[in-house]
Length: 260
Image 1 (spheres, rainbow, N blue to C red):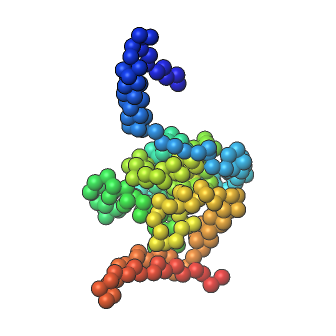
Image 2: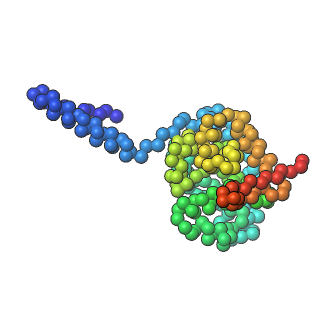
Image 3: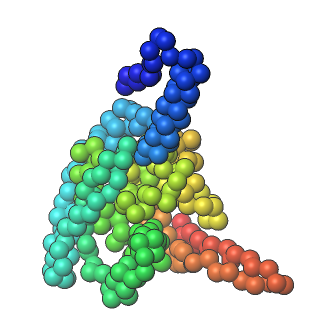
């Protein structure tokens, strides 16, 4: 962009020229400060991560493609709601894309009341809880099967196998400084929230993942997601605020692994 500084006639006093230049620079700074510019880095992992994702999707197509078809057929026989769901999410660099997923079970009335009531922030938070928390092994398997169509998003270059959980526009705006790190990676089928302690701010996961990314990190996150499908017993208990001697203490999040 070429910016031409204002120039006055040669006979104009130096003081007036300096004042005009200062006024122009001040106005330019105000315009640049108010511009909706978001800084983000080059795509996380680069071409190597992209090649690995595409290769993994292609090699496992004989597994996930028939499983997706059978799951869609069974779901269609169980309810009349549309089986394939498409919703808008924000990907790398702020580009919107259509995320594919399966609807294995129709939403219950309770969930509908949560996601349709309150303001946009409350609805976004409710959906995040629904997507990221599971109370038993069956719920985790259902959630994993619902993501099978997102393999197509990986082939289209919109998502990765491992990466930040895809966010909508309403969920992206409150991230503030963490927005840069989210926009620097392709959203993943497998989220990266497991790299944080349960008491940390969830927005810190994007910075932690961007700063510590490696193929080993992705492999460990993916393996933890696969292993969690075999967990038995209580997987998640919501943190409860407990008052003790006038102070509020947060209860410990309980995770019980299988004995095998």
